Length: 312
Length: 210
Image (cartoon, rainbow over all chains, first blue to last red; front, side):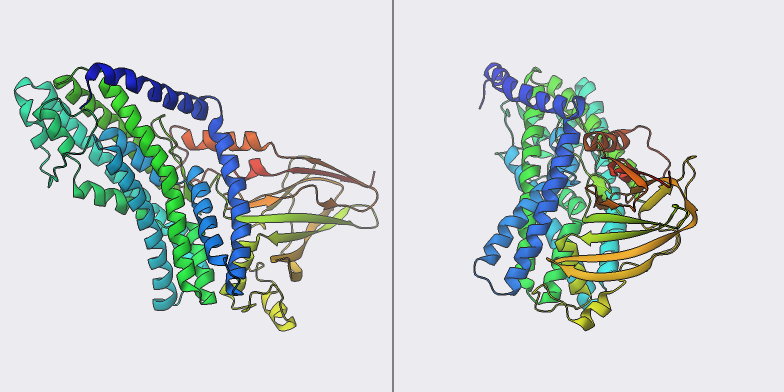
């Protein structure tokens, strides 16, 4: 376990790096540069994908491997620009004392689940409902988007509520011990779940909060809305009769998306631990945790609601 | 039509937007203007070349070019013709024309010219007539929601006697606008999309008969 003083120094550098990136992104117009780069990259990836799919259909050797590599790139660009999984993973990572390993696993799982939902939507749509491209595209863009924003807003509110409850516990001296127990979730205790956990039982309880239910909620909120690019590829390959290649490609896209959410997870955990490392152990950390939960929860909920209203 | 982008704690790359900043269809557009004897612009031919993935999607969805060799038979060309001209009510063809006084010019319904498959791209053309001929106008081609991204690259042709000036879109500015729209607080009216497409459009200024 890490010494608190050493931890402070060790966290300073990455926190500064993340802050510098944040300043560039939102303060100096970096976000716009990133958007532009992502859109241009996506255009190129999209053209290349069409060529590879045709080569695959023609039975060209090596085409499947090329498709997988390209789909990965497409997923990366898709997520580097807009990808709603990031807000959720980032917000959750800030709010909950979840380990980088676990948050990373959540990122990958949610991206793969999103790929899975695209496969389900397209194959259910084509085989069961006999839908065409227009209906499937519309379903992904309109209906699922709204449902997904609503789900994300729900997670935000839930983080918020949890933070407020924890805050009440943290500010009442006699409740210090009970703070971690109030949540009543099905705790899955994990000894390997954090960075600075040698701070006594209270923190252990704080760290316990991430449960299977959290994981399922997060994954579900991301997965509920499949990506349009994945839908395109699946319809094309389904109509061409190269089903396995299309499905494998969509999962490769999911991994590409996950590579970006993993970066977000890293940034979120780094920031959070950096903040917590500055605070003395005990109740101070509890208070800081509640504050992080409340702020992250509020931001996630607000952002998602704003998008939900636009999508409606 | 949306993808997703949102503000979040200013800590990580968490953006996502339903529509904007994330086009899914890329179209190379070109325009040809035609004039009457008085030198006024009467009609405009628009050509859309769809990106290869979207083209493939259309073809596969329609069950055309089953061997995906990039060639369509005459019968298949007949089938695909006009595939993009069944415009729903309110769709303006992603083309916006403004007269000298800033008033929107009315364009007639599209009349399809031809649809071909070139280098894996579906290329379709259509003609729009101006309800009233004009001597000076400004044209912009864009999808307000930016689901489709139009790329003009200076492909505007006009008859002799017309001058054409093209002001390329400032893409950095456009993407900055996207960010601002998305982060704007409080949000705009509930059901209003951040319609940022216009910011990505080149501005084409045409003057004829001078």
